[in-house]
Length: 166
Image (cartoon, rainbow, N blue to C red):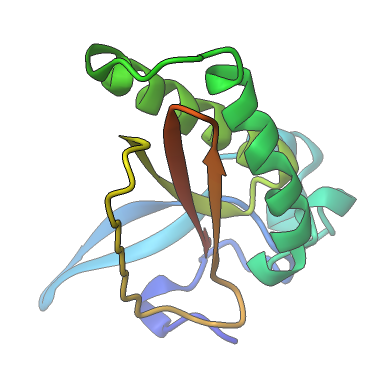
């Protein structure tokens, strides 16, 4: 899928590159151009020369990463909550932030071709119901989501991850 004209990279790259928006003023308002700011790409001249990126960066569809993300999520949660035996409301903010940061770090290690959103919910296990929903408007070929539910005797942790192609 080709980017809309206001989002195309001006570097002429044919392959994927990590790009950040740079504002260009026009008569009708602000247009966004994308330029590579990735040191690895600039060093090798990958963006300007249109050279292929390393293998892990060739994946530009989040659906191809879902299996790996599904395996990584419980590991990230276990690192933070694995030894927590009791629910303490005063620690939930800290736990939630730690789980979110662990997951973000792991997602970046898996593949840096996406912007990631991580939503973490931690609640005491008391038999109460919990319903959640989300709506998205995105390119289904590149973007995707993975949700994971983890629990122990004291609490339930639900992590939603969203990968949006750059």
